Amino acid sequence: MVFGKTSKSRKSVGAFMALAIGLSVFSIFNADLAISNPPATPKPTKPPKPTQAQIDAAKKEEAAKAAAAKKAAAVLSSATKTLNQLAAIAATAQVAYNKALTELRIAKENANAAAVHALKTQAEVSKANTVIGKMASNAYKLGGDFTNINALLSANGPQDLIDQLTTLDNIGNTNTVALKRFEAAESAAKIAKIEADRTKAAQEAATVKVAETKKVADDAKAAQQKEVNKLRAVQNKLAAELAKAKNFRVTLEQQRQLALLEESNANTATKTPNQFKVWPNKGFTGRTTIRSTEEIRTKAVAYAKKQVLARNPVKPYVWGAQGPSSFDCSGLVYAAYKDAGLGWPTWGRLNAALYFVATKRVPFNELVPGDLLFYSYDGSVQNIHHITIYAGNGMMWEANSKRVGLIYSNMYSIKGLMPSGGRV
Image (cartoon, rainbow, N blue to C red; front, side):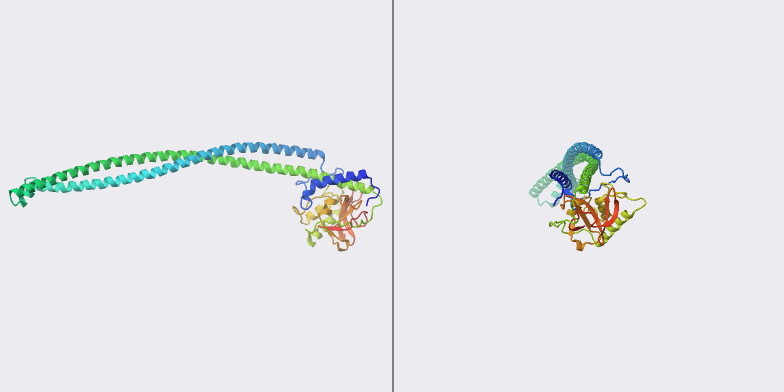
C-alpha cells in the first residue's frame, strides 16, 4: 500500500531495483561483492561508494590486461605449434633409432653365427690335416708312401696287392678332395665372418649417428617444451590478472548501483508521508535455511555494538561504506557478520532489499539478538531502504543516517518496519 507516491516516482525506483537485482542476482545468496583491496580510511565528506571515474579506470585496466593476455596467447600458440613440429621430428628420429637398433641386433647375431661357423670349420680342417699328417709321417718313416706300406703288409698275393693298392689310392684321393673341401669351407667361413664383422661395424656406426640425431631432436623438443611451459605460465598469470581486473570492475559497478539504489530509497522514505509503523504481512518469503549459529550471531552483535559505541574517533555514516572507519546501514550488517566468521561463498555485500531476500523469515515473537530488521517506505521488498541488527528486548544497533550516525535505538523508532525479521 503506497501513500502520497506518484506513478512516475514508483516506476523510477522500480527500474533502479530491477537494475540492481540484474547486476546482483548471481550473488543473492552467496556472492562476495566486497572490493578485494578496500581503500584507506575514508573521509566522511567524501562517500566511498565507487565513482564513475573509478569504474572507467577499472575498465581501462581490464582492457589492458585483456590485450596482454591476447598477445601472450598468440605467442603461446606459435610456440606450441613449433613444439608439435619438433615432437614430430623427435618421433621420426625415435622410429629410425628403433629400426637401427633392430638392424644392429640382427647384424650382431649374424656376425656371431659367422664367427661360430668359421671356428667350427677351421677346427674340422685342422683335424683332417692332423690325421693325414700322421699317415704321411708313418709312410715317410718306413721309406715309402703310406698307401704302398699298408698294401705290402696286408697283401695275400699279386692280385690282392693290386686291388689293395687301388683301394688305398682311391682313399688317398678322397682324403685329398675332402681336405680341399674343408679348406674351401674354411676360406668361405672366414670371408663370411669378415663380411659379417664389417656389416656389424657399419651398423654400429649408423646406430651411433641415428642416436646422435635422436638426441638433437629430443634436446630441441625438451628446450621448446620448457619455453612453452614458461609461456603457458605467463598466460595463466595474465588470465588470472584479467579475471581479477574484471571482477574488480564488476564489483565497483555493482557496489555503485547498490549504494545509489539504497541512497535513493532512503531519500524517498524521508519524503513519503503516512507510512505504517509496521507493514502488514503479504506472505513474504526468503531463504529456507540459515548460515549462522548462536555464536556467530552473538559475535555479529558484539561487533555492531563496538562500532556504534566507538568514540575515539566516532565512526560516521557514509553511503557505500562497510568499515572499518565508517558505515552505511547494510555495510554495518555485512561487516558485522564477516567479522563473526561468515565469508565467501555464504556471505556477500548486498543492499538492504537483497539481504531481506537472502535471509530466513522470522516472526517478531521469535527474534533473537543478531537477527536483522528491515524498513520499507511502501511495504514492498524492492523499496526496503534500511536494515539494522536486533540487539534484544526490542532494541537494535544501526547505522541510521548521515545526520544521526551510528546509534542504539528502539526497533519501532523508524516507520515502515517490515512484518518479519531475517535470520542470516
